Length: 252
Ligand code: NDP
Ligand code: 8X3
Image (cartoon, helix red, strand yellow):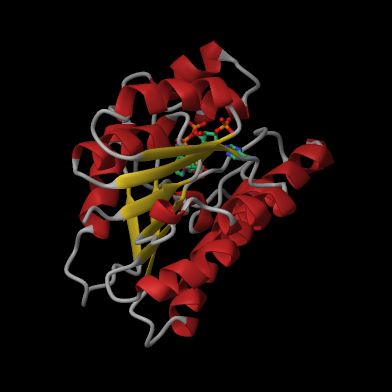
């Protein structure tokens, strides 16, 4: 019998690439996102390969999340994998010039949304037990601070520590937990972050050979299909072009 994966934020970037690869690899899929037109197109494209359930879902809407996952059709109730991917960054301004609404949207999406989906699906994952997995998409921003990263960095640090702590609570259930932390990756992420600034998008990725969504999809599939006795706790992945700079020192 095919296994079922839930992928949040499957309408673009990592989530969409993962949906395509997992469908090819024989996984049944529950795909979510806010853009229903895209979900319809994705369902039409993938449903000849595997069973697909799409759900228009804003992860920030806690009641909607609870209702959606508590009323899954019976053939989608046995869940083997949750990929908590839906997320975003908004703004690159220093904290003192940032928009508080944008900060709260990042917290609501990357922290509250991720925890709501996890909470809703833990019973199904525990019932699956051995070989079930949760893969949370963190970021290098959770480990390495940078100017203008402020709340986005904070939300991804939460994802990393929540993932590790969740492992402690799930000890003995067989459910695995991974925090996958990508670096510079080319997706709509930067358009969302900059309010659709294509010049900023082109400037950021130019000449970098950035990570592509397909690279992350391959990594997700590898983690999900590891033997059931293995758990990747954290995995940080960067393009070769990306590395660290010296600490900034402000001189008066
Ligand atoms: P994209 O912008 O391409 O994809 C983001 C996905 O999240 C979309 O499918 C979007 O769907 C969904 N999403 C955003 N907000 C919500 C919401 N409130 N409810 C439901 N779905 C939502 O970016 P990426 O693929 O690059 O990003 C995926 C994840 O990877 C994010 O968590 C991001 O923080 C993280 N990441 C990205 C990196 C990068 O450089 N690109 C590097 C490291 C981590 P819709 O708009 O339809 O709701
Ligand atoms: C996205 C990577 O470095 O832009 O999470 O924050 S970064």
